[in-house]
Amino acid sequence: MDAVTRLLSDLVAIPSVNPMGRPLSGPGFLEGRMSDYLEDWFRELGIACERQTIAPGRDNILAYYEAPGAATKLLFDAHQDTVPTDGMTIPPFLPTVENGRLYGRGSCDIKGGMAAMLTAFARLVRERPKGSASVLMACTVDEEFTHKGSSRLAAHGHGADVAIVAEPTMLDLVNCHKGAIRWKVRTRGVACHSSTPHLGANAIYRMAKVIEVLAAHAKSLGDSTPDPVLGPPSLSVGRIEGGQSVNVVPDWCEAEIDRRVLPGESGEETMQRAWAALEKGIGAPDWLEFGDPWINLPPLSAQRAPSGERLASISQAVARATGRTPNVIGVPYGTDAGPLNATGLPCLVFGPGDIAQAHTKDEWVELDQVRAAADAYYEMACGLGDSRAG
Image 1 (cartoon, rainbow, N blue to C red):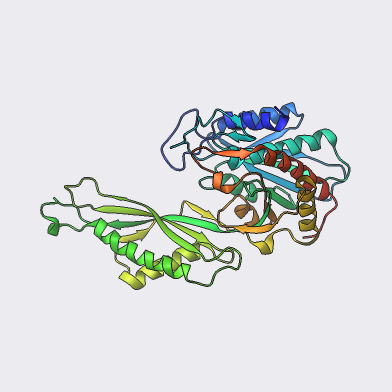
Image 2: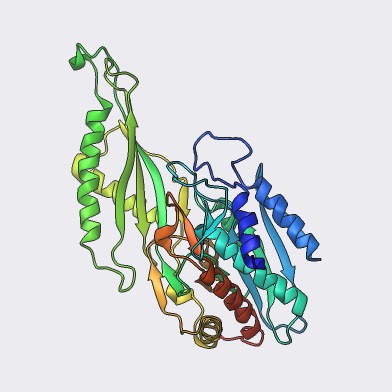
């Protein structure tokens, strides 16, 4: 087993499941064990690292390689957490290699990319190639739910000139993606016995009116002028719950909203537009309210992505490692690049694996792509050392 496969196997074998807002706890949840492993790994490499506490049991791990005389500081970002294992048909934390693939939770999203980045980082430390960029390796937390790790990193003086964010891109370069804002809509009612419903006010019936208006609003968004790369914005009601018992008229109901945000839109603006649609459709009754968003992920804008000499250098680095010139594309999903890019940091998303395999019941990644990504990340650092263009 080669070094990058051994490293990826170690990473997959360590559970780092994001509870995704559910009241779940135990040794398999959160990133604590993964952070401990990474801290030890960097120290064995001879590199000091910093633990940036985000929440109890959740620390960003930051390690820095300073290249002699470097003109550019490159940020490598890979998140530590994975989605839960519900419904998986393979042992989630038993890394298994078959037919050139490594199976296990997180193998594709994004421990394959993390293993490749760490391998490239270690090679830089050991070989100290002349003219390379300095590199900050950031292993962030909570990417799968609220992106608190990358948001803290973005806000606290990383000093980077350009960032590469690991996600499954099939070794293409992503220079734009949608953002997301998620919040709850709540309706209130008056509870009473279900045998006399006329004495109460049914919060679920009220929510039905809300859903009807939001469905029409979602259709109007789908029919709006699309972004030339990312398509139109979207809105989806993804979850609903309410009431306490079938024989009680419900006095509450909640629906969860997912709104995908285009570059140029703000999350707050999209919530205001949804509220305006409801005011137009049903007024502004006192039984209706919006909760505060629990995620407000900015989009990645191509206008603030690397361009010119830097983009050419990164593309050439990928070509040297993979034997092909990568496509520069946009994707509909969000990444840690959103918060980083929102502060003005030029970002690209790049990594091994296919997003179609992320979060699946038998998640896997092609090991040849992981190896190629490790070479590509190394070549990026080497090629960006003297690059100052935007």
